[in-house]
Length: 173
Image (cartoon, rainbow, N blue to C red; front, top):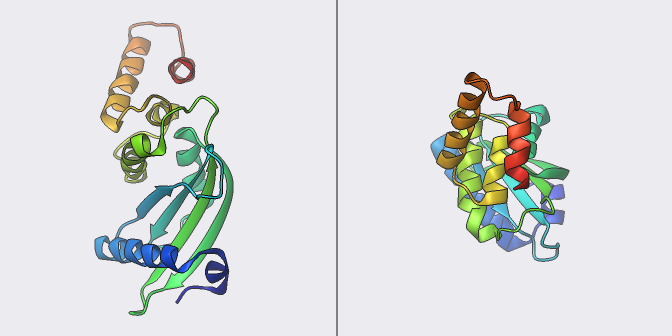
């Protein structure tokens, strides 16, 4: 059952969609994500919903992942939902602000961002500012991994710029 705070916040169509995402997360026994834009908010605002059937996730585990992806986290709405079969699911709905330099349409970067965020969550991809290139440059996770590897290689051969300096330069250009 949805808590009253959820019922007050979302329309029935959104709840139906969330039930599908929660069922998907329960079946996979893994976290599920949904990046979306709310009709009533401007072009620079997105939302990320995280559905987790396993446990409530600490904010300190989630926030760096989103900030390194290039977002500014504005607010969060957490919900604990009990499915009809008794399975608990935690939904976290984050309101995210896009950087001014993000010019890509959500439809272009959504699959890349969701895939990369899942990779970071599973620790199959590093969590650093190189990940912002997905949002800012429309790269996929493999391209970001290659650029990260090149940045580390440059450091090994004596290139003077630090990793944060390389990340910043790539993000700004």
